[in-house]
Image (cartoon, rainbow, N blue to C red; front, top):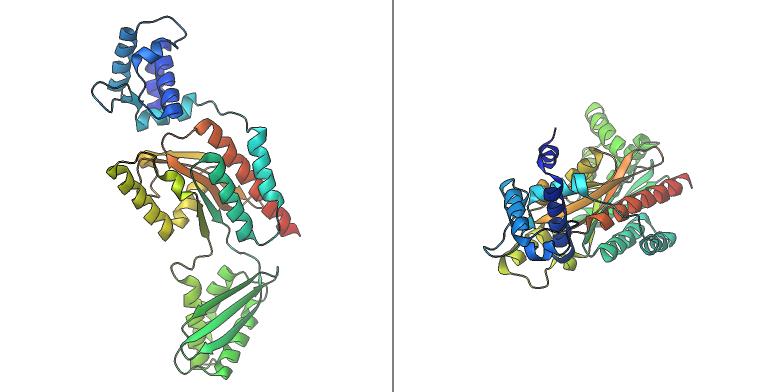
Length: 356
């Protein structure tokens, strides 16, 4: 039995109702919930003094906390976790929210990046949090690779994929680069690339350069290795984390401590740190997952929650993820179905594009 399940089993009906109402009141208003207010909403008539005693017991169990000596109570991280796991009532997706998401994805023209950017904007607008959308790797086979000299210290590598997608990357070529070396490097790569994805080609290149080192001109070899370094460079990952709605994370009446924590989160999002870990989180379990406070290892802001779901391709392989990050006082019951539906919609749309 988990810690949360054990604690829930220890609560009688009255304690459970007080706990549930405190959490729901806090999630609705963001303010501590007092015993007097609760006494007017309980299903049984009970005094404020009795409710205070119940609150003290819940505080002793670590489920509630008191931000000020004379204030009401708020849920702790453990309390929120227990509520989300055991007492959360997830509302059906509203027709209005569904319509907003459907309209966003119906405009399916443009590339995948533009589509996912619109998805992120819609998620942020609907949830009033910051949206995170992890774009999929481009896994189509490569059709052709070309090198183009731009200047003595700049060159362009062009990758054309079998589905028509094109990627261009500028990099610093080896000194003394010649047109013949560029042709030889392109011929070498195109001879290997047929039918391979970019990830497969990277593995193949490393083996072939070592095996055929004597056959390849040194300049061409250096050019191939330079291009390979560009593809593997930090910051040039083929996953892409799209972040929208950062301003929603700024509290209306921000204290200096709150602003410092939000700035720390902004820094993390700007650096797009831990993208791989973001995807790994979604691969550990199907469906929507909720990370509360310090459970969220991806970002510095411990006072945040992350609601995230993977999306899959036609082969049921996880290829990306969508999520919402915001204060722990999120409307989980509404946001969970929004994230879930968005993930399903994106997966279905990308699968249909792949078939085309």
